[in-house]
Image (cartoon, rainbow, N blue to C red; front, side, top):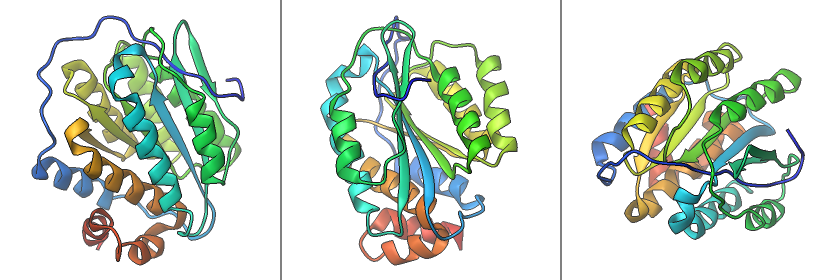
Length: 241
């Protein structure tokens, strides 16, 4: 996987009726996270992967803003090294260098634009496995809206991550049925979590992404310190016990 940022592509998507996330779904997401063994305090490593295919064009600006907010919020939480991974276009899947400066990450993200093409989540999972074999990856966050790959192959790669103890937290924009099924299975196999969202739940998504990032950077203690400013972090902390 190359060491410079770029984006994914989409083909035909299944037709579904998008529905906003319910409080029950958010609670279920947090319930899934509670079973995770918290990362040890200190510098964490988080891979942030994005579907940058054309189907996400309408919400791309919102996505960039949310992701920027997410990493700015964890700057004070004990440190977090983040790698941006994205796919788009014809067989294009790129990974950035690991960065600690939120501003540097924001600059990387702004260089990415949406292009048509198919999903390449298998490559994202394989890349995450290789990275974790070199140095522990505390979590993978994936934001997308559809799925055009074979679930059996994705499940095999997700299982490899699960054996390495790398949870994948998947956030789905909209309710494309095939993607929902795949995301839930990947979350199950990696002991991660799944949560749907729509443009109307931007604030909720921001809080959940930030809580996961804080958790990856410093485990339960960092999340407890952060809970004074975030209701999502507080809810997550309550689920962790």
